[in-house]
Amino acid sequence: MLDPGRLRFLTTNYGTLQGLKQIPLGLLAMLVVQWAGVQHGPATDLTVPVIGLLVAPVLYSVIDRYYRRLFGHVRLSRAARLHEGLGWAVAGLLALAGFWADATLKWPVSGLGLCVAVATGADYLRMGWLSGGNWRAYPSPLFTIGALVVTSLVSKGWILGIEWWRPFGLTNPLYATVWLIGLLGILQGVWSHMYLTEQLSPEAGSPHGHAA
Image (cartoon, rainbow, N blue to C red; front, side, top):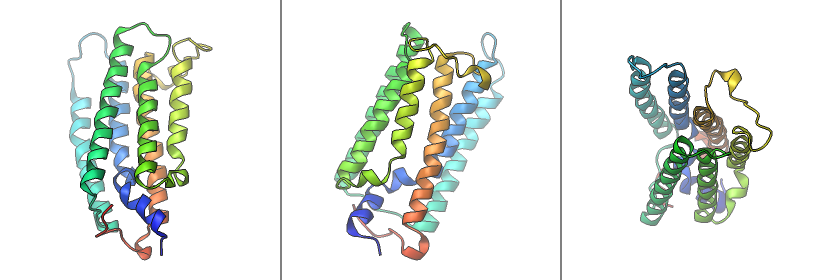
């Protein structure tokens, strides 16, 4: 049996902990920037991004059914749904602001990387706040935040000027940041999935029917 605090953490953050859902989204981001990096002038063949946009939602839906079949579903309270929705909205706005800054301003750091790091940190705090402070048992977002901050500071020349993205076939720091966000999303998603399955295996019981 799970203790009440751990059960509350799992049910409150059940959607976030379904980490395999991040894999198709991360792969899509990485695929699109790799494709964009080899374009010369206006793109005329959109086959690669179109296929990615068609396949990613299908994979996401398949993974969602997998989690429902394996663990059931969780009915979040209205307040929890509101906080989660607001969190995603703010994160999206921050990401758009960072992307715009990188695309139009000559900053010595990656605005997109730093904005996504801030959004990840805010969501990490939200997870812990809604579940009574049990976020200390789930440290993987801290790795994502650290990686984004470090690469955001070095990739544009403010510190060291290391063009770490060149060996991966990426053509500029903005594409590199998007690619890295996709990769880190995949890695954190795998960690989240492993954490969820370890803490809430089918033998231990499903969260189905619980309200957070």
